Image (cartoon, rainbow, N blue to C red; front, side, top):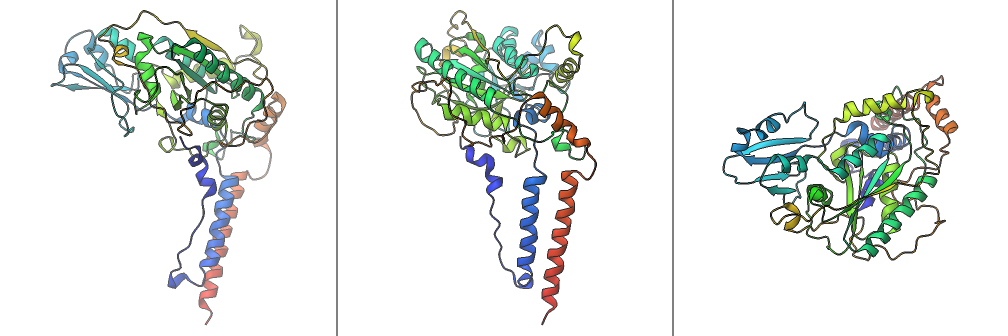
Length: 428
């Protein structure tokens, strides 16, 4: 995965093609436009972190389940399939296929590059439940709703030494980033700028964690295929672990089997940085199938956050010194021969750089150097409660807001440029 395109807008270069009627005042117009761009970059940019912007605004796209027509007429599946829709928490739609003998689950239609389905097989109540939910997915979404900025999911290969080394590498980098990284230094709640408002939900903070899942877990087979993305599982070596990072409402940024410190750091810092592109489908990644009513669950999380400290069961965790939590889900019995897991689990890896290096050969430093500012890394700012309160309260100061001032400057710049050009054009 090329992280350079995340910040391409900041490196845009204006070019001008001279047209005869505008030749005399093109320089003035160009100067005004350059000023507009510079102001827009500094004064109008979204300052909400990517992970929180996605949690507030990016609804997951719907997966498509094509099933034999008989399933839409016979219970108990008929009721489950009929209940899919806007009122269902599932981002799933069902389509009858009269000619099909088996059901097929596909990624949302927006994912044009998918090479094979997420799952296919006999559709039963048990297999349907396995498609729409699983233990690791439930824990993943629980953590996000509890305030995790991003959750890394390690898909274990079965080689204990390689898996543990990869887990230690991820854990060490997440611990460092959680203690050293900072959120963008601007108040997200600006009454005059909807893009900088945060919605209801957990406390805005940096909190990172790791989940581990084995590739041979039958109940997690559809989930692992979703983590692999639209390109499928074939490209991932079975004897190496791979890791994906999940944020927002079940959005996967990418999956990598060539794990390194820089890969973990760049992907995580991108999610912690300001949202430079607010359009979901212009950002990298793909969605997971979730059985979560995100809007109502975020309202509950917001209500929990606003409770007085005395009414809570336990004091809030201090994120400055907490160790990212790792949970390993033990495998169950091997999948039967006709299950999805038995058909071979392999994966593609859309990564920052497509290298196939051993993922866990680097030594882990207890005091690693400061993170590289390589992926839209947030600017240094204090993460103390006092500084966060001051930043939030700054929006109530008198005088025009930054966005209002930016609009005024843009209007004046454009007007002056046009007037200067017209004046030049009138000269003989």
